[in-house]
Length: 439
Image (cartoon, rainbow, N blue to C red):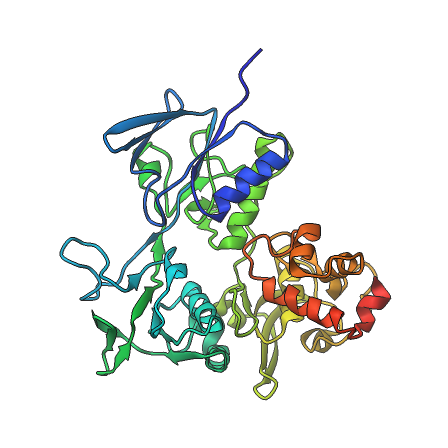
């Protein structure tokens, strides 16, 4: 009797956990893992891949360990690019007291003010999460407005207002020049109180291990539609995997890659095809999203649909070619975000009532087209509002119960507030006429 096929997962984080979970779901029981030591580090100290003998070799504490594999899956995390800021590092190259990097920000325990430094989605997400915990939080970004590179200045300005309402002090167009104990100094002479400084810098794919093993590397570890590297016995997923000629970063892409690869390794017919660019940060302050690229909103040959409603704290700008969304930026429109995101990803046309879609007005679905209530609330597990309501009516009346019944909120967790809000709405007996009629 031959030995069972061994899948070795080298790396950590949600993508690695998702992969092992889905492999076991498909009945693949011989799965082993080699966890990493955190963001920006190769797994378990010094490592190498012995491709000739199919072994993953680690060296730690003067001891060598070798893990045999039939299939190896690399899940390295992206490496943070720390800013060249005096006062961040001590003479030994370690972060000074009170400075945290991605992956450790959840460990903020100081009761004093926290400053988050960064321009990307992780910085805005972290600031929003800290403020939701009642932490005195300041967000410092060099861009003109938070996420303006993704949203534009108008929507970015509205996002800044929503963050302020949620308790975040926003300092846009600001440049940090040095860190001293308890303070972050800006170029304009301001010294911000920062008992804790959370760094959310840009990142770079960590391809060191793959390069050393002789695997093909471009911007990231190059993989095909089966998420195979240039060695057919080695696969790669996550922020460092380059599929379709580009990196596909973020929890949603990693989640989909993990599920697809688990199906492939279980012998099912599946292929990973990267979706179009999409940004949907997990914020307590508001719902915001960008689909496509900001430059696509001004692409020749497209038609624009725009809604700017500062009083209602809503914004939308869509670029259409025919009936299809080329790009979109939305804020304060959760149902429209869910529906437009689904249509954009799958290349489906918008419904005829576009104003109703943006305003979340009830309208019957056109024949052969998907109802707005079929759009996913949980993007990671493709759980729609209709599915959630059906489970709620069947007795799953809390967020944990709905998670158990539908798997909503068990991915990146970003849909948690929306699911909790739906629970509250249904529990209060508020009527949702369209859903009741459609359920």
